Length: 148
Ligand code: ADP
Ligand code: MG
Image (cartoon, rainbow, N blue to C red; front, side):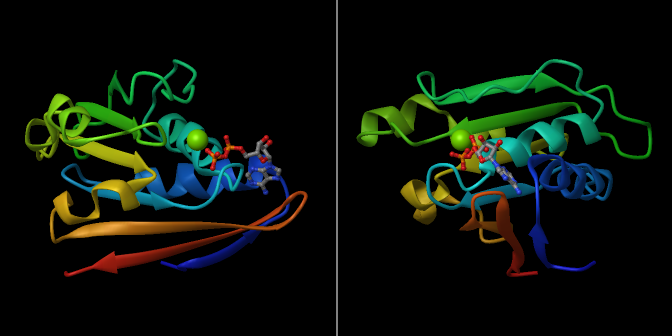
């Protein structure tokens, strides 16, 4: 798969996420990096669509985590999408409240905005997705597979 993209509008970012979602098998941890407004949540909306989730993904900024039921095809076998947004994560207590180890399961996809805040707690094998603001409507999206 291509791993470096430039998108020219939000819909293009969502389209990339949608295609990416179709390649997931379950058990993946997606660590999203990038400044505010770089397109992480926009990407999540496409990812959710790609997993067949009908609910609109909103940024769970105040509650850190939101889970969605996935009605994916048999071969995909994904039951849950856990969306974390750690922008407002403060201390250790907040991290414990997330019960991370329960989220990292084979039937789930975990996607974490501001993953840099829990970098040490990510499973060794994960996928980093970096978002960069290039211009008003242009974003760069880069995928890096870690430890495969
Ligand atoms: P983050 O979650 O990283 O803070 P958001 O996805 O919430 O970022 O916000 C990105 C903003 O940038 C949205 O208002 C979106 O409409 C806008 N935008 C403009 N161009 C793009 C693009 N190519 N890809 C993604 N978002 C874009
Ligand atoms: Mg966001």
